[in-house]
Amino acid sequence: MERRTFLSLTVGALVLAVAPASVRAEDFRKSKPLVWTAHTVDDAMKALYGTTETKAEGVKLKTPKVAANGGAIPVDFSTKIPAKSIAVFQDANPEAAVCVYSVGKHDITEYSIKIKMGKSGSITVVVEGQDGKLYSANQKLEVALGGCEG
Image 1 (tube, rainbow, N blue to C red):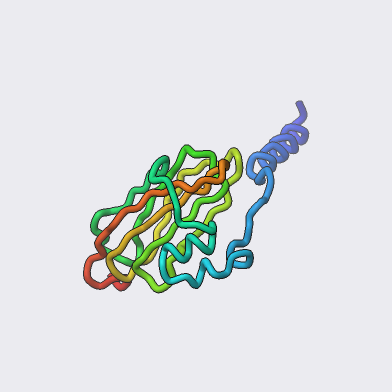
Image 2 (cartoon, one colour):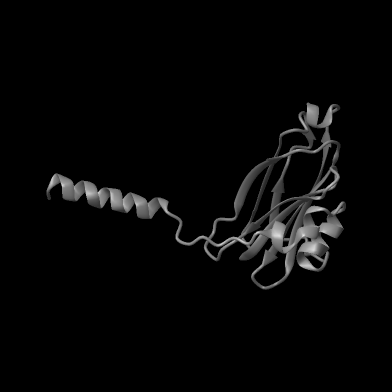
């Protein structure tokens, strides 16, 4: 094989490997603006999903029991449930919604994020399943004095 042919095939394969198969994302800030101004977790969930009823199963959530720095709290969550969306909420800051992810059929649903919390509270992760049901996990954590300032 010629060197140029080999290089062009290699570059083409890399582009296909790196490029996303399809871009699909709902802009929840535009389609559901009340989610982002809700002051309680229940109000934010109701604005996003129309209900607050969830099954407390199928979602793994891991946070520290005590966060030394409220400005960068590690939050790890995952699910094996076939999901449409995954949302993260907290009850320590004025607005409850943290983030919402659109999930595709073959997407990996293991996330690791950092969030800010000004005081101690709870973090809730809600998974909207392909079956239309909501599944959740909740964990309380303490934020050391200083809140977001650390």
